[in-house]
Image 1 (cartoon, rainbow, N blue to C red):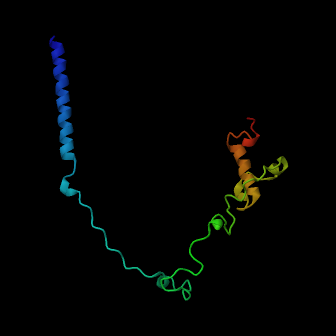
Image 2: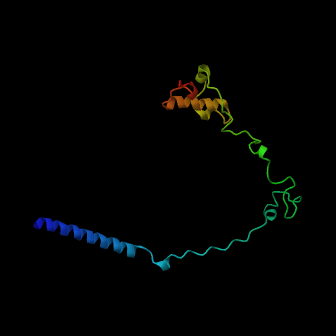
Image 3: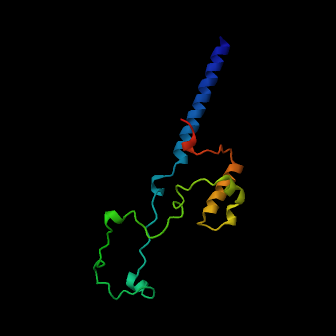
Length: 144
């Protein structure tokens, strides 16, 4: 019986110490209310108008004061996906896989070819075959 009471006292003592420590950390570890002031926002710097800032680079003689460009500033919705350049990441979509003869003739180092060359794409293809656990077939070739 004495052993049981002793273990209960030990448990209550540990619980009391834990609560006292948690209370002390909560009260003293948190900043006071008067310490939570934010730094004042710095004043804005005096800027220049665009036509004054970039007058050496552009001709602003035809710009109307306070007006929009003559052709408007919004492109028609039909022109939103039309670009005047070739997207280098998308230009090779749909490229066929090289034939075995073409694959033998190509280096597996893509840096041997200039960017925008289809042989560079095939070099990455050849390098992927050697360096990964690649099965060799396209997704559409897998029976399913």
